[in-house]
Image (cartoon, rainbow, N blue to C red; front, side):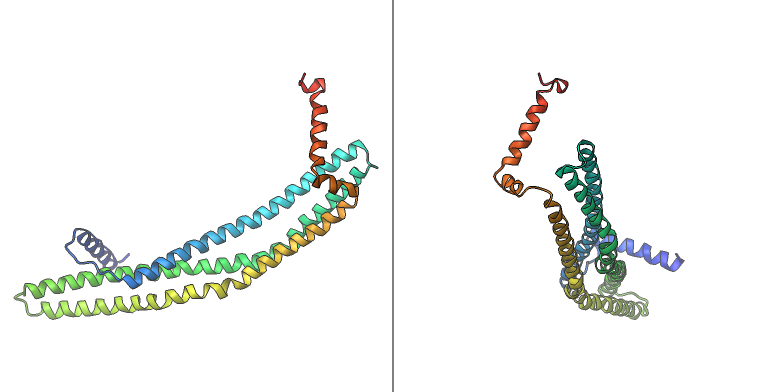
Length: 264
């Protein structure tokens, strides 16, 4: 940082302290404060959306990978018991189905998800540091303006014997005011525009997410329906009637009665 920059930083820090103690009047711009508040909420929401979207994609990968491992274990159980049974054939079909789903996530969904959702979110979030830099600059120029206004008022209230001080203070005040108002007006005008663009910007991403979820659900339903043909038609009716739960409980009871389970 140059000496001039360091001096400005020091002067602004002093102005901030004097404002906190009430010695320098602080400019309050309600219009800007309102727009900044809405912008900060939008910034926070976009950052959360980017994080949650990544978590969702990671969870989808983890879910299909875990399902594939689960299917592999189930096939091992049934295959070790009787490879020719309906259950063994169903478990093999289940394993093939979930492997296809897991591969489909990697092959058909990962790239479109990154292109239509993660990349647009990343681009939007990349704008925020630039906007924040302008807000920070505006706030610094506001401190300069408040300091210059305070200095001018003091000279007017208590005229100096030096005739050059008043014109100089007036010029400093006018210059600081012009720079501040230029930045302030720009932000007040453009922050609402940025927020208004969020819906048309995210519309394609929202639609793409719905379409990809539909595609995954439809493919999952199709593949799992193919596995169901290995089960008797009565299984679905038994499940609806709560009889499958009773069957599971019956087998658990038989397991409890085994001496090696230590239930007796």
